[in-house]
Image (cartoon, rainbow, N blue to C red):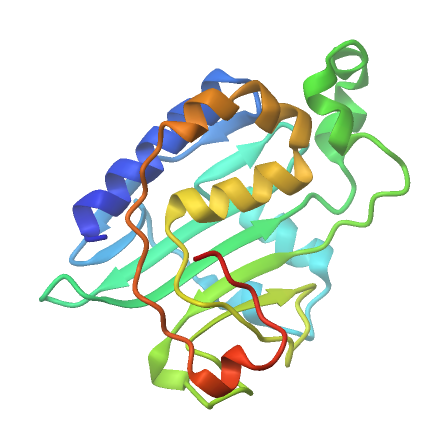
Length: 216
């Protein structure tokens, strides 16, 4: 999977999610000297801070339009990759920030009532939890800080090993399959046509012997 593949896959997935009605707003990816994200100068450090209220983090990202995808329930998705001059992946960050108050649903409740595609996002007992998949070999500390890992809920030391960096398809598939399942079922045939090129494993043997996420 190289830079061109990444941009192409993100663009295709964005179009698909807009067409099926899950995404309200979108920003298409761009390649800035090997940094794959959207156009603009953003400070991403706020989303990594553990001493900032989650609502404040979400508010800043939303107001800056600092996202690839804005789902109809207000959830934000960021898809970032960094490649070196040899087209090798050196870092990635794939984030899902659900709306802390389900603002979009509250503002347009009537439009959701009769559409099964939104059934997963309108229940009062849902607890919004941020999810972030990171890949950064430069910070590797075996078991404690795996090259590829997933963090739930902005916990500082939550780093669950993942077998390899996720492609855009793997990440979006994980999000909509588990959190927008009715919407996923409506586009499953289109998803099954996607043939992603997975990255090579980055997990050590010792990391594979503890609880981890494996998609190979």
